[in-house]
Image 1 (cartoon, one colour):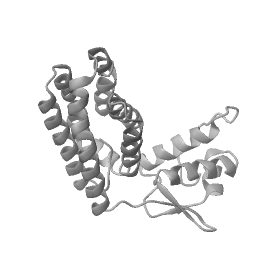
Image 2: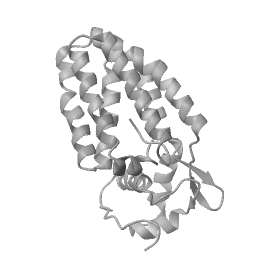
Image 3: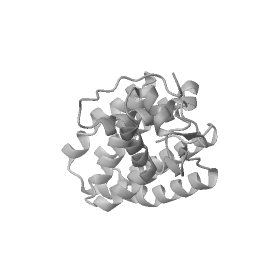
Length: 226
């Protein structure tokens, strides 16, 4: 076995490329793939037990997300994110997400907000059960669906890209210290404030949540998503 823990992939399915990309993200979260290290598609393909082509295509998808970068004739280097990057990502997210949460609180239908409760509870469950993949998926779904209620697809796309570029590498360390659970519970608090029609309270909660996430990054080996 090479760099990765063996993962069974269904090679008969059409979306093998997506399966590989998902597995590579899991490897980033677990620390099996490390920032700054170059990995070749053929070597990773051996770990998966498949051909190099879908691995290369999946790595190109991750490159478009900013998670890796191509290295000519060698493979792909896992992107390193520094403190300045994290500060800038957080600043942009705050400029977009805080006022948008207030606007959505004032305008969204109650049933649309209530539909997010199972997702908020799933974030908490995943954090408590150390399900990091489940945590990331539910967290992303919650935030982007919530922002989508503002009706601006480009806004959602922009925040989605920022989240991709600032996540993954420190999540395991945060989980081991128990720091994920308090952050996860803030999603339920935010939703309750929005359902109560408290736009100012929701904006304050979102401000605190983003600040909490940034402070967790500062205490970890790298960024995690929030």
